[in-house]
Length: 203
Image (tube, rainbow, N blue to C red):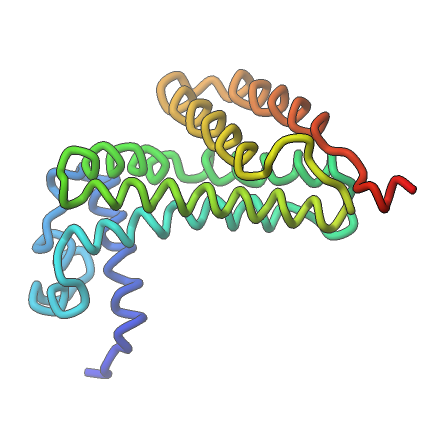
């Protein structure tokens, strides 16, 4: 049997954990079930990850990073600020609609992490990664369009995350897609009003 590189094996196990958790629930996501899903022995799981908690931590990271990547990929080079911001939100929302089970899992994983002092830092790290990703997107849009925002970018990132979290959770409950998109569009409109040319560009 060909030897699988450790990085590839870890990536396979993360995806296996996500599949088991979304299909069977977080409580059923044991290292044994993950190993069965991946078609390997439990010993290999423990070789790649020190614990189930570490593996689930990586699952959180993968899902959160995918949200940021989806938003970034939707931004076309050379677009103005309104178009770039709207495209970023649409890219994010497209991923939500395509992967509802994975999005629900992020809330389950956050709740799970917050219930234990040992895993609580995982929830904080997940949120920090999301905020960092949003901050990077806003900074890239501002730099490309030579604009500044009237409020600190880190504050806008927190506002954005609060809105996207709330809209996503609401949609997972009622699946009212038009209402969810309308809410995101309304927030996008408000966010765009905070953009202004840099002093140098204005002159």
